[in-house]
Length: 157
Length: 157
Image (cartoon, rainbow over all chains, first blue to last red; front, side, top):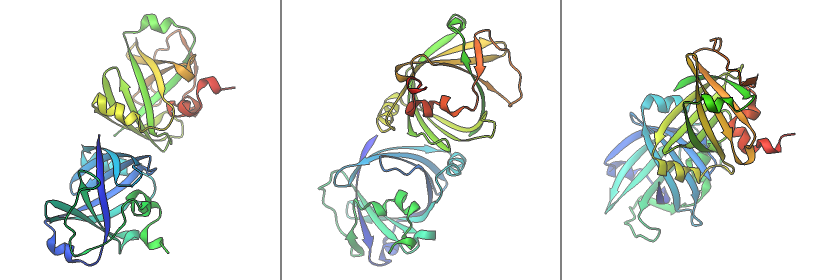
């Protein structure tokens, strides 16, 4: 159980794809999408994961997180038990100074949405902002994957 | 992921305690108590477990079940994220013929409730009924631990 500190941004253009060191396809669903006790099932490439996240801090940047790798076939079986809706995206890892941005390009009902996250050791840690970074959306719950599943990007005003 | 087939009974008297081969204290909470996707966190003696159960079959005797052992300290941290309410009980293992009954004696808000379960390989498998066994309650959702947490025995009419 660790505390996860992340800042989240929108993205201006596709330059991040040129800067990416690797990419992986991710599908995920939720056994509970409530923010107080999110239970996420994920396949990431040929690996499976089960992740539990607790309530956010007031700023929205810190969350308790617990994660276990599980066999891919078990992850797929658990996905079948998940709440309706599924997140499908490609994650690009983009090194920038001493940090690595995770940029998620969404598909399906969330097509058109691209979100960049950077993990920090404390909420005030500084980091290099790449040129393709747009406005910050840290703590805005509509960008949570668990919320995008129920209220996808295509349905936004 | 296995299918769990269990039949559940009430208990007439405390004779099962004399017949028990072992006993262990169990505390558990739920990251999701919905029957379609129950996510249970359990400490059992000095071990921790995370368990996911799917929807029941029509008879109530079969349920998909997935379980992983996890470190005790991680189980305790996850218990803190669970829905309000907690199940606290002692489980007695009681051998009977070729089966072993699990008899749960509940504490706290469920004090006075004792439930015996036997696991079968199919729904029609026969088994020896011990003399202390009372009426069958298989499939009655009010005896689910996930429901007892929200509507404990002490609150029943």
